[in-house]
Length: 221
Length: 221
DNA sequence: AGCCGCTATATCGTCTCGATATACTGCTCC
DNA sequence: GGAGCAGTATATCGAGACGATATAGCGGCT
Image (cartoon, rainbow over all chains, first blue to last red; front, side, top):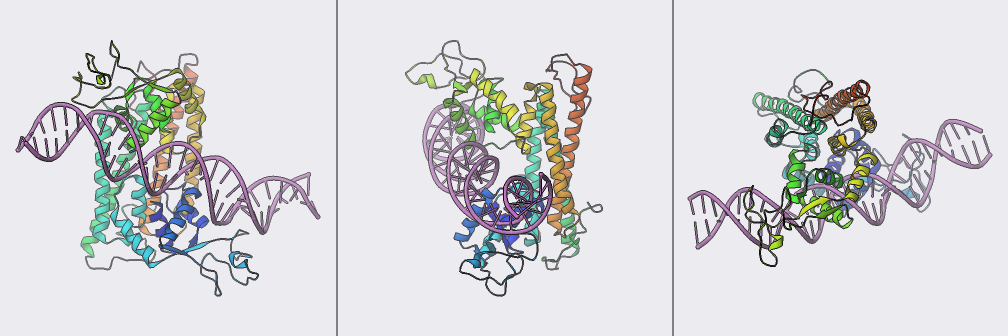
């Protein structure tokens, strides 16, 4: 699951582990709290499978993360000094996605089951890489899952005699699932609208957006 | 985390793995989806550490899960046949909590950090085993965590330019967190009310609720 | 007669997590 | 002015959770 997340972020910029984690935390609300104990192994894994490669900070200095250049000494190549942006740091390994990685990314994105909230949220966050009907499929599968979940929990809520606290937890869980369903339904509606009105537009959209299918109902945030 | 869940359920009834899983799924809305690949190892772990023991289906037949008795043959002792309730099944191992287990349960319940939604939900579901002020502490810690989380996510939401889908995910996550905070705050209010009005009553309380503040007072479980 | 589906337990490999160690830099505070 | 703390950065390890899979008995359906 982390593989997908890492590849998705690397799809846009080349990044190093620490920054990757930061973005995972606040750019992708779901799966905050990914630990370094997950990220670094994931990166090694992806590197040894050829989906990702480290960026050599050679002359010309790469775009985002690497140092501004002008290094000397035999191991200085691995050091980042006097960095333009943020403050002092240790040597970094900047990763870049490879063509094989891009392929793997698309495969992971479409293929795997839409299990839990985390992996669904992740997939949705990268949904712009999906064809419109695949996107719709993703949303509808998720809705079905949530409805099934609700059907499973609801009966319990108002039949079995539960302890107050337990009951409160179950009820709140059910409410959250209902919220989620409404959200998904809004997205589905927007998606369908976009599908019918502009049936031939290329789906990359790209660019920032605000675009979307008139961004799911109401105003900002 | 599963240890706590298992002990908590075993605190009420003796149960076997399969049933344990069922209850985990629909009695504790959070952490549905616990797999058998987690439960059985957890039970073995707990058994070998003496927190739990298997119930021998001796004469007199135990209460809930074990067979009704009348077995023969040398290994028939491990078989459940002609069970009164549900239909045919395979041999079961029914587990019971030990005094050491009860102690461990209380330790796990109060001690560990209130990290994620899962483990918080779990702790709250068993909150009746906690003293009122410990309960309040649990709720307040959780609230603080959620608020911190929100403060972390919110700024991102309305500053950085994100892709539509990504943005939607982040916003929905933030909304969910807000919901959660409201829920917790309701619980805190109710808890405080119970604490001030009936400062000496035993803290078992119980009773259904229709949730929310007020709620929680009335009669037996 | 064969097969499906449900109850039930068990194991295996892979992934994730949390704790911990290491390294370097810049800032604050005494 | 230098000691120590806080922040940036990578890495490893053990423990636990998950998903897939195997096994097994039983009942019912066709």
